[in-house]
Image 1 (tube, rainbow, N blue to C red):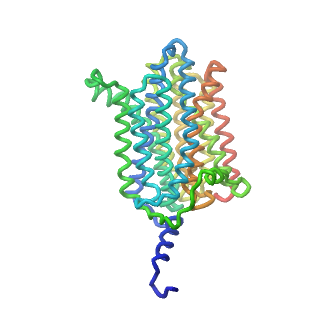
Image 2: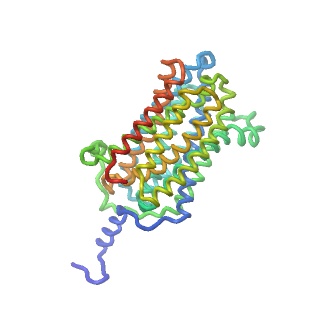
Image 3: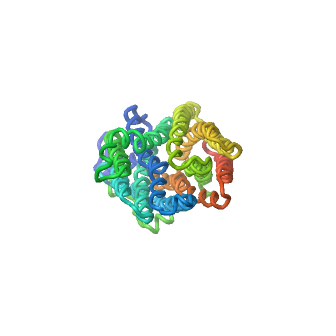
Length: 448
C-alpha cells in the first residue's frame, strides 16, 4: 500500500536505514570522535611496531643459537618470519573487510571486528612472549599480524563510513601521527620505562622481561580501543539487505578491473611501491645500526631510540599539517607525490653517507615524507573506491598494499643485504621504489 505524507511502512524504514549505512557521510565528525580514533591507532601502532622494531628481532637473536656468530642468519630468519606474516595479511585484510561489509550486529558492521581483532592481537602478543623456538615465534607473530589486520581493517573502514570527504585528510593524519608516537612509546615501554624502572624487581621472578614488555603492550592495546567503541555509533545493517557471501564470490571480488577503475589501480600500485620503499629503509634499521655501522646489537638498541624521536617529530608535524592543508585546498596528489619523493631522498642519504649522524638526517626526511604520504594517501584511497557496498573489502585490498610490503620487505631486504654483503644496495632499492611510486600517483585522474 503506498504511503502518504510522513507515514512510512516498516519495510520503507528498514530500506532507508540500510541505504544510510552505505551512504557517503555528510555530517562532520566531532573532536571527541577524532580523539578516540587517534587513541585506537596509538594502541595499534604501539602493539605492532614496538615489537617489530625491538622485541621481535632481539627474540629471534636469542632463539637462534648461532646468531651471535653469523649475524646474517638472524636477518634471514627475521625476514622469513615477516614474510610468512605477510601471507597471513594478504588473506586477513580482504576477507575480514568483506565479512564486516556484511555484518548485521546491533553494534554495527565494524565494531564487532574491532573487538575481535583487538582480542586476537593482544592474546597472541602475550603468547609470543613464551616462545623459545624459531617456529613458535613465527606462528605467534603470524597470529599477531592477523589480529592486527582484522583490527586495522575495521578501523580504516570507519573513515569511509563516518567521515565526510572534506575531513578525511585531517582525520587520516590522526591515523598516521600515532604511528610515530606508537613506535617511540612502544620502544620506551619495552626497553626503558616499564621493564627497567617499574618492573625490574619482578623480572627475576617467574616471568621474563620479554613477557612484561609484550603484556604491557597487549593491555594498552585493549584499553585504547574502548573510546572508539563508545563514540563510533554505527547504523546496523539489516539482514534483508546483506549481500550474500561466498569465498568464490569474494575471490572474484578481489579482482577490480584496472580498465574500469584505473584510479583505484594507480593508487594501489603507488601505495605498494612507496610502502615497499619505506619498509626496505626501516625494516632492518636495527641490523643496519648493529652491523652496518658495526656498533653491536646491544648498543644498537640504545642508538635506535634517538632516531625514532627524530622520525616521530617529522611524522607528527607532517601528517597533521599536510592532512589539514590537503582538506583546505581540496588537493591530494601533490602532497602524496611530495611525501613519496621525500622518502626517496632520505634513502639516498644512506646510500652515499655511512655514519650515525647521517641516519638522523635521513630519519627527519623520512618522517616528514611518510607522515604526508600516510595522511593524504589514505584520504585519496577512500575517494577512489569502486562500490560503497564493498568499502571494507576494497579498503582491505588497499591495506594489503600497506601491510604486506611492511611484512615482506625485511625478507627481500635480508636477501639483498646477504647477497651484497652490505646495506647500500638495500637503501638504493628503497629510494627507487619510492620515486617510482611518486610517479605513479600522478596518473590518478579523477582526484585532484
